[in-house]
Amino acid sequence: MSNNQPKGPIGIFDSGVGGLTIARAVRELMPNEDILYFGDTLHLPYGEKSPDAIRRYSEAIARFLLKNEAKCILIACNSASANAFHHLKKTFPDVLFINVIDPVVDFIRLNKFSSVGVIGTKATITSLAYQKRLDGISNQIIAKATPLLAAMIEEGFTDGNVAESVITAYLGNDHVSQSDALILGCTHYPLISEKIKQVVSDQCTIIDGPGIIAEYTKNQLEDLALVAERKKPGTIRIYVSDHTPSFARLAGLFFGDNLDLKEQNLAYDPMG
Ligand code: DGL
Image 1 (tube, protein in one colour):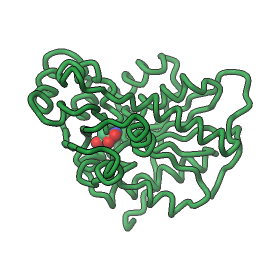
Image 2 (cartoon, helix red, strand yellow; image 1 turned 135 degrees about the horizontal axis):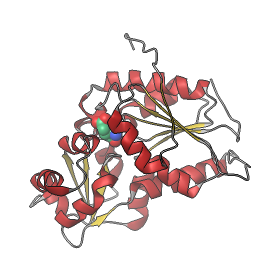
Image 3 (spheres, helix red, strand yellow; image 1 turned 60 degrees about the horizontal axis):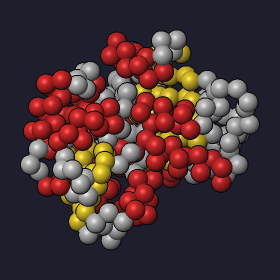
Image 4 (tube, protein in one colour; image 1 turned 135 degrees about the vertical axis):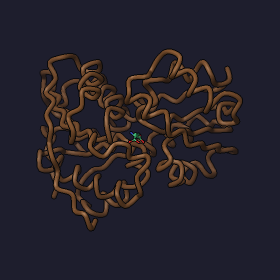
């Protein structure tokens, strides 16, 4: 299955709203591209799932996006990037897949941070995807799973006392927040980056994942002559596997109220 048409949409998927932080950055950088987004709200959180389950869900989503003519697939979920990227590339060898880990690791390599902290879901941190890629690039890598953060954000707690207490419990007085650079290794976390900034040490740079990933995607599309030649703004279509009010509310905050948001059930292969 392959779709190498520049006019096709950029396919983007995540387990929920987190990937919208990436979709928004892609939209800002490439306003004329069509975006086709899938949020797998039925199976959220991926961060608590096994690698096998994450691969199965990701494969079904990729099939859906490709059936709808996606010209590439941006895996806007760290848990899926860490656990399903290689599986997807092997399953669909002709398709351009972009994960959210490699662009950030490239950025760290170029900017030579001596110690790097990374926070993310259990599925991301235990996969060692960041730790392996950063090995030899930074002198010290400190990784920490912060599983409550994504659930807290999905529930709308991005500000106020609850957010502050949970962030401080994870990051206050912890080595991870003393590093030179902190990777927000979960696509939900940019929504609380200002709060995180208040807790980490002053010399710690918070890496802007969405901006870096959007730029990387643009370069890939240019290299493969896949940029749309459209002169007007592209469309944004959003599908979810379970239409929840919290997704609709957060998606509205990103892209306005006139959202093209639909529910779509996917066929999953239970045997993987
Ligand atoms: N979007 C997921 C990630 O970047 C976090 C939410 C989840 O656990 O599904 O890892």
